[in-house]
Length: 273
Ligand code: ADE
Ligand code: ZN
Ligand code: ZN
Image 1: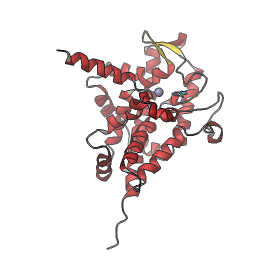
Image 2 (image 1 turned 45 degrees about the horizontal axis):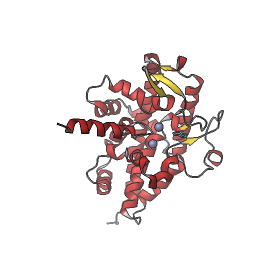
Image 3 (image 1 turned 30 degrees about the horizontal axis):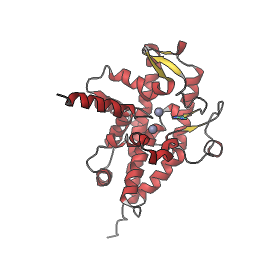
Image 4 (image 1 turned 135 degrees about the horizontal axis):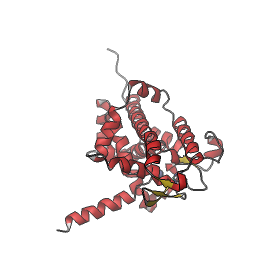
């Protein structure tokens, strides 16, 4: 009798721990990426994470936020720039140490390094899966004063929220409200809508700094035009959910390509016949 209640409470508590895109956003990105993996890459990944799906593994970096021994990783989920900046300057904005741009490079390098212990490579893979998602969430490339919109309180569909959470979670949940089958169906729909031309454009540059700069351009727009009366309503959803959807698609496509690259270059060179 208690079991369904326990399951609901557990689901709520897990959901509550997700920062960055909410759990659904990260799973959507993971499933889009998973669909583009080569056989070799899929095998290499299951050798590292076992039975866990890629979509679930994308959420790990948020689940450990309550673990004090991972406090060092909290600042790796974002990068901030001064108001007025049109692009990220790594000397200026990355001066405080590791942040999302360098964390993507560092974890990719660890993942590719077969001489590293397996546990380290598993962790690097899980960080990478998550950070490639987060860097595509516009407000993860934002401003320190209001913690990337976390301090900017808004009413979102009648509930208290903040601008950061609107983009992490609320706009996705609004679409999921009308989507039978939840995040998996939303992910399949978004993936099938990607054109060859988009894929080509998005893969032209597998560079985390370029992705961060795209996010900053969106963030600048978001701050120029905050929700009217700080209320997120259907009009705001109609305006910004296409942007959210495209960022989820871009993150998934790029994550898949990054993983295929990582495991290709890792493969032992073919012996000449
Ligand atoms: N804390 C400070 N800045 C942040 C940002 N841009 N995103 C998430 N958390 C933050
Ligand atoms: Zn995150
Ligand atoms: Zn976030």
